[in-house]
Length: 620
Image (cartoon, rainbow, N blue to C red):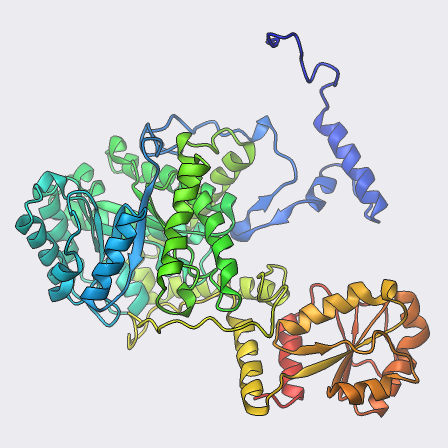
């Protein structure tokens, strides 16, 4: 039935309803103009994007992609949220992360964050990167523990940190039913990071105590970040979180707890990335999958997963770190729309060391703006009904469930970790992604794209590594690591010689002919910290040699149109070689020319090219 607006205006009345076939026909026409002769579903496939986990993002979604089993918010399978009200009451919990070792400094930072928007605290306690257990009281001085939930990260001394926190609750008169947060017991996560075989007994003891005495305090964290930080895909992160949760369920129920009570002791932690739609789908799929586990365990009503989302450390860059503010904004949007109850925004300088006060302020204000100014939390499951998000949620859940079953067939997560199965799978995923990063198929703004070779370095106080000296465990990767290594070589060369490695841009013809490829070349070589000298504006066979000598470079790149390459590429390349050029590149792939050693083009292995140039220039 069509409902007419009160003013009689129907905006769609003058337009016929198009069919899917008509749309495909129009796509075929557009592709034909670009030289691709495809028809039917192949036309749609040509505009699709392949993701990790075997997923594909298609150009068009319709009502046929609507999920048949999303339920309602607060009800199984909890796809639309673990609580009926979602985050609408007051937004999500803004959980600030802290890893200071000095209790006095930590106390100042905690109070500053709580006074300016943070609503809970995530504290590293014990070990080389955390506040000492005996300093926890000083660090929490002035913090209203009945109002500000505390999440502990104390893998080195769980018993000591948990005992001290509960003592502080008692000492400060916090009623046991008012104590909120998580003790953060995650022995399997610690094993994944360190290789030290997990002992689940302490986690079980604390879960039993919290269940009996502290109804709002959870004991166990199911942390998927170790797998994300090892290069795992979204589906692998979900599958491993399920395997971790199931392992804890087995341990807790084996000790005599009911499935309902055991589920109530778990808090799940996931990475939120700048791919906001994948983040939304991941959190929704995680709830659906855990609801299935609870149902299979005989407690369907206990399947409401509590989620803590953390902006991805893998996506954070050391160069041009200010761009990280944009990445974390997108990640936080995805986490909020996806329905996470708690969100931690890592400061933009996280990859450089300990954050300063400005970085912490921007981090917590990211959530504040999205909640208070964008009103993101006022709608429960704002992505619900999006055919794309619903389809992506379903496909991601299927991929994660398949991987979870592989882990279970391997004997469960502890066995898979110790056999190296998990490490091998994640390493293969990261290798495939690294190839895309090297070819800039997955661009990194400020690093592999639009770099600033002469940017002023942002310096921070070094942060201690909580896993320094660990005997093994999964690696921790970053998207920028290959380019960071190249930039570090350039920096060392600058420090030793006073100048950066150089490449001469030999542009042919007028600006209209060479600007696009010259800009491409400057951007490409800048990603490796190599200064592109584009002076003079253009050269020919008579001037190229002198221009190369004046530039101080011994590597050159020709830039122009295909037509001018046909006329001038060979003689200009010969002149450059005669003037001492050790290597001559050509921007684009129009054909082979004498004295041109290699081509650089969109999709080439930028890391390999830049590495070879630095090697050729003798940059150690």
